[in-house]
Image (cartoon, rainbow, N blue to C red; front, side, top):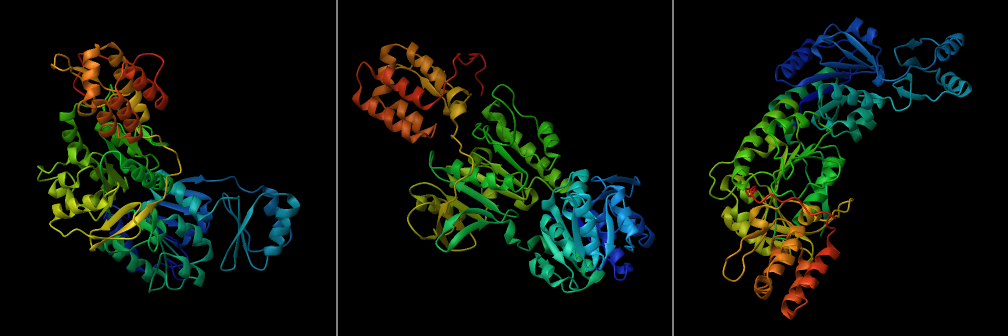
Length: 572
């Protein structure tokens, strides 16, 4: 379910000549019984509205005074959302014979032809006020107060996100309101500019249009309507910008280690988070612990707790990284299987999260797994799965995929492996020979896309690799030529400490086999450092240890004090 909130304007949208038809009321009751929230967002003063509309209790919240007042019908509480203009402003207009003249908790309102008197009073009194016009109405409010700001206040009260809102209106003052919602609709009697600019113009007028929209909402038909203005930029393709829908999409980002999967994923995530979509990153290896502006749950010595994750996500403004680096490898799939249904349940209740990213997806949903804890990506909004080997994913996970972003110098191989896992022919690759390749699996061709970079510079994995705790399968082990040792380096700092302490025979043994550069290239994904270390390995020499240490320390910032290391705690 995409839309959890239906927000309606009142006059000439929900109501015709101030009255709401019984059929429209019955449709709104059905929406309420479906578990969705109803909001009324109107320019009217509250007492005026309540005097003509006996069904106010049907709504979970009412935004009155064009965004100036929030009313809770259940509690009968009123909350002004801004400071009212000074009393002398209304007194001056009244003294000039301006009538009608309404004064609410925040709003001062009149009608044409008194706009010049209103503007003159604002100027002469030196007030910072805005004038909003609506079909002959002249509304005066503090700056920044409109139906969109009132909608935001109501959604905050309901722990709901604007990305789960469908809004409907008819007039000039509804532009900001409809734009703030995920889907903005206009009844057929709306002003031409609103019909032209809204996401979905309706065929019927007034309450009949609202009833039709409610029917499409309840049937799920509205979920399938594309809203291009929300599509997320991936990059530049052969025919211009390539964008991805933020809802109902299952994507795999695949490619060899160090190929740039995290870079592409991070750029997409940055845009989603900036657009206020709530994202959850399932992070087995601590690769996203430095993601800007996102709360990280879980540390090397403290694994995440499902209840803690769910509490954080109650607020739609808060995205999260679920960092499993402190959790034993064998426990991660079980934790993942427990958490995902609970995220589905959270979204069913509140409408968010909007996107779940699963890093190292082939470990959490391996090919041997016949069922995965997600049946439909729409239950999570959208889903991104990051993997080195798409063919190593569970067949049930593959069934969730609508597209593959292949990263690396040979995307044809990645796309071919994925197509083979689906029992499909490999797609034809179209476009210039650089960038990533995007295959929308509904078609037979993939396009080359030059990915748009993220705004924030991210040094991939540096903190974790330098001083964090890497998992067993990514750590380096000093064994020596006879396997007498088993010294685990769980980050680069420990690697340097151990390297400086092992005997020369052990150091030279791994040096001669190219183990150091292989580890740095394959496990850390740092191909540049791996190349520099490989050159030292080829040259050998008595000074090789110092050279390797200097290369590491020049590239990574290591802590001044040694990282604490507990040899008995070896299960991560």
